[in-house]
Length: 226
Length: 295
Image (tube, rainbow over all chains, first blue to last red; front, side, top):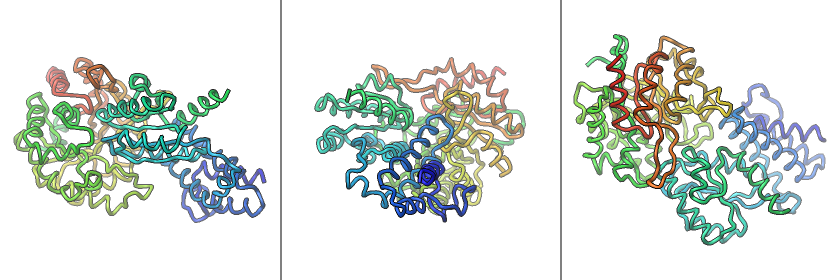
């Protein structure tokens, strides 16, 4: 049983979707996440265990490797695909409360900015380690962030900007959110950003990659519980 | 006028231009506005940028078409203007710089991930083909497939240009530095030496590195290129460093003075076309020109 769950984690890490998937080449014809998850369920392993110790563990490994530049965007995307293929089989884990979301993470690219590759990567990684993610898309006005926070009290907000022109808009969105919700946690990311910029606009943390965001929130939220 | 590559082969070091986006922002481009549309709505501004780069000493001037492919323009609902935007932008640069300066038309990435199926290879090819043909029609003599991260997308763009136009082609990737500071790679994990092994044999004579890195860090990329293959000519267009936030707005730290100190080093590592990317202005190009002329 442990062996099967480890294999699921490994398949997520390697991005092995199912038996027919041509990627990665050295696993051609082998069972992938889709088959292994069904086998695990057939053996009576609880969905929550498969999810947490298989899929999420695999995503967590790939996230750490990505932050160390040991793997790159395509690898993370394949892992996310491998994870997603198994989710329909396992959604009961969330429905029964067997597995709880880490929290709600609202994400969007700021107003005026249409770039979504980075934002989507963060979304996939956050979902992959157990956050419920609400994706507001690109060109997100401050009011839209505000509305989403109203609908999801206690949610964490992530903002992305790729342009020097739109990073200024990030400052406006942060101000609007913090004025109404002084305790809200806002994390920011994007190529032109720095921690210095993050401090100046009053956001909580600049994250150079998805893993930094995951680790920051893990630590921050555990601390706040103590 | 000789082709860019034949000038390089004769021993010339050519000076490129600097940023366009940075200058458009200075001229009032608003967040959320499509920069390429300015070629239609504010042609005099676009012509002025091209002319001023030429005056600053550029041998090669670009076009306002970085995001001019149909897939990217679609995000602004402007996909049906793709042909017009590219043709007009190319014409504006050509008419601003005359026939003795190269117009190296910009072809940037589509902004979507090919491997996630967000766009099909056919769609991508057609989009680059349409852009390249319109740029040629407008008067460009060369194009730069630039700021690339993905080998498949770059190959597709290269094929679209080579199969449908006579444009001389430069292929340029954008790299980041690894966390340990020892390696360079694109967002998709492609290293400089991989770029050379993929494209070295594909009739691409000029390969470049642009954007993302500043003047110092981009030396590592050029040096890795050059160590992989000495028979290719290299183009280097660094950013003016990492932008930072000040009371007066966003500033780039690397001045023309900083830039010019790196020019001899680039040349030593095989660079034959030197210009700038984000944050660089006419003054950076003037400084590069001075150094090149003094060699």
